[in-house]
Image 1 (cartoon, helix red, strand yellow):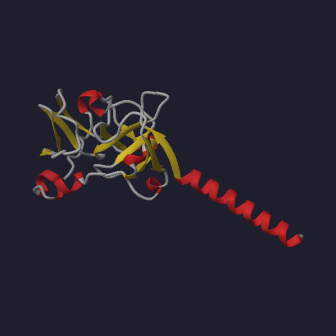
Image 2 (tube, helix red, strand yellow; image 1 turned 120 degrees about the vertical axis):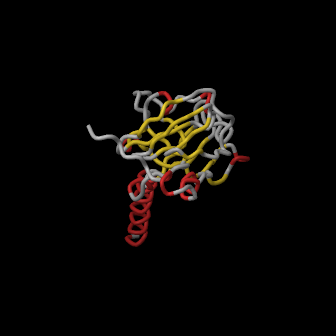
Image 3 (cartoon, helix red, strand yellow; image 1 turned 60 degrees about the vertical axis):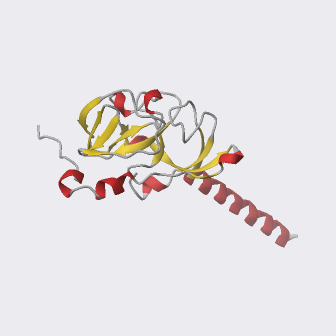
Amino acid sequence: MKAFIKEVLITAVMAVIIFFGVQATLQTFVVVGSSMQPNFYDGQRLIVNKAIFNFAEPNRGDVIVFEPPNAQQVDYIKRVIGMPGDTVEIKRGVVFINSIKLNEPYIKETPNYTMSAIVIPPDNYFVLGDNRSNSNDSHNGWTAPRKNLVGKAWLTIWPPKSWGLVWNYPIAKQLETAPASLAAPVPSPAK
């Protein structure tokens, strides 16, 4: 009987450790709204890797979940476009990072707005929805602070026909192939 109780206790302790380990590293997320169409739809369920940003910085093209800076109750899901120190501009619906035009095959359509060039502050990220003309994102004058990042979208789990890994586009590769003078972030002016 002692051996049985010992096995039950060991199993229970292991279950608790696994449960809290999963809670600390993964989270389910439900997409709300249409700001990430055509890649993510309202009601779609994802698994978000919460631990990844403890070990690495987000990359351009990553789909991230974060607490919005405007005190909304619901977390946002957007794509990282600009990194700290980058200069981002949108001209006639085309996004430029450090004067390099981005090829963005993941967007629904080109946005119907223009945005003057801005330099992304330290520890902040410029994020845009894939449905550019229907997204509350960084083109509205805010950025996603590093401290607000929840995690990186990793796996689609619902609906079943959409099951699979979340595709993150390698925007950085576009900047690597540009001339070095254009690819480097522009430092912010000294004050």
